[in-house]
Length: 511
Image (cartoon, rainbow, N blue to C red; front, side, top):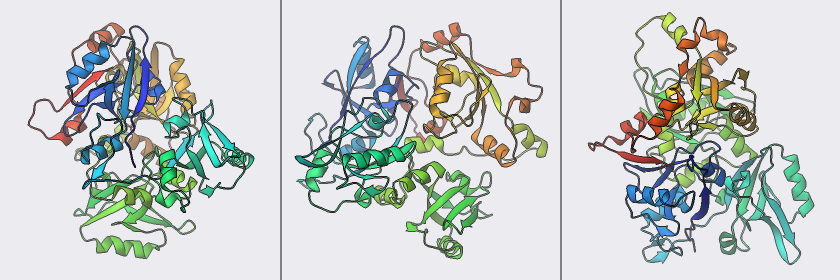
């Protein structure tokens, strides 16, 4: 029987510092949400995930308490606090099934019968400088290979791997019947990333002696997910070019028009088209896919994957259609993260080409570190070049210095990092001391400059003086700002999405 088991995470903070996350209450969302995890902060290092719901604080059930009560409980805990946290997907599902989450043994019930929805899980791990953070054991008395010594906060832990999980596949290939040495060799030969198909103890008991494969798995633990784009045709069409790679039998979306229906739906340059209106197109030729789109009329629904997501699914030899089958409803509204990542409405062009060329410039941002950090999250896959900015804290050092969501990082303290790994960029930032200077480019600007073959550097700033550089306030002013009472107003994208008459649609508190 499926049981909702929250993870237990204990955090300790240094004097004058925070736990490294925001506790939020958001309009249209139930529960106490974890948001804006600080890069390298206690919360992130301990394995907290964005969107998780805090159920207990130091053993006390808090799901029914007010935001201010929970904040007070955390603050009154001193430098150490223990949380019981349920991941976002499980929390939403439990609420829909009216599960009593105050009971640790609660089982989802439908029409008076316990619902069995246990699935094997796909876990994608990208190796860090300290490895994956797990071991494998095998015993003569017990067939199979099992995960053990999963280090808290490690790559494996963050990817959803748990102690006693049974290993079924490595990179889409079955390892049942393989020896310990053969599996270890497969992992070593995998390179910097690996895809596992795993069974936890409870699921293993349910599927005993049954044929199991990735087609039965849940993809909820995977770090990259396909995107569903519902597009309504405009006067000039959908605003993209469909291109077929005959060798790979793949269809890519190219030349996305600015402000087009495709861009507004979240389609990005070189997305691979997986399905049209729920029908997979991998075996279709160019003409057949075009016909499918035309037959959709004025509205069509695309399932697309970007390069990183595509490579991840291919690593596990599994189709992104698994995501569509698991979500079920292709017309569901975007999640919080998706809503923040949707392109902002494009303002009508009011100037000539000179205006457009003026916009195709990077920006130089300087900031001073505060006790709360710089106030942004660096995103990127370890081992894969290309880092970008996420979770810019409103009013924080990064926000005031001009950093924005999805900005691409070009330089850190004068050093180009476009080909650097995630760990290398993080190390540069941490070694910068109390101040940080970054050369960044808006994602659209970055893509356009790269498409033109332009090398991005400070030379593109032209006559920009340091006085014109985006600079945060002085540390003294920043500390004063951080002490201001919360809650603060939600980000612009969230305010637009909430559309509530209430004067306050969300509450958040830096913890």
